[in-house]
Length: 250
Picture 1 (cartoon, rainbow, N blue to C red):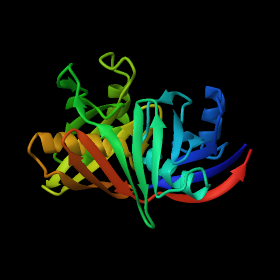
Picture 2 (cartoon, rainbow, N blue to C red):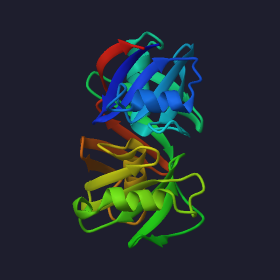
Picture 3 (cartoon, rainbow, N blue to C red):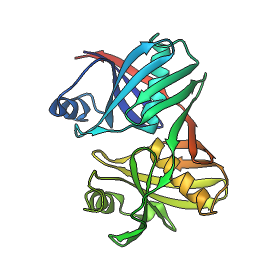
Picture 4 (cartoon, rainbow, N blue to C red):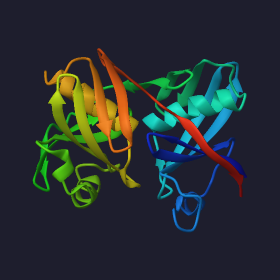
């Protein structure tokens, strides 16, 4: 299997051309940072003709996921760089619908999806007030005074597997710095804390805007760097870098 290692703000992926239906154990082995290639997840990109491609995503533990925001941006870059789509506009088919992606010289802009609050309402878990939301994939967001002091690994693992989330959930801890900036740390289900999470940034920014805490355009500061987020009604866009780190074969 030929692959490309890609990353968006340090959120890194093994990317390969489809069709491919890998076993969960193989995905986990490839994503292992000590015995494999090392990644937060696997992206399989299948050309569909014209400017359209299909994206399939697996978490580092081998579990499938609906989509991935930073992965979506990497898929757009991969499709153009590998000649699977002419660009700069790429339409990416995901498990939760089609997403337009614009591949620029230094950054990639993508529609993550439509923001929705979960019907279950807010929850108090592991000492934090969490608001379950969806960006096509599940997130639980807590607004905190200082996200850098949160024991993300301990709390994230507890919340991810709580019975309130039968499909498990991503967990975000956000600090409102100003009307134009959020600081964010994310525990990704099936992965752990990552350097960046595109759908998590979209979820936190959309929820903050809905609560009147921020404007419609914000910079979300993640461990891997800044991600630009724009909220247009229910639709949420993200923009940031996506690059190839290296190529290889298995």
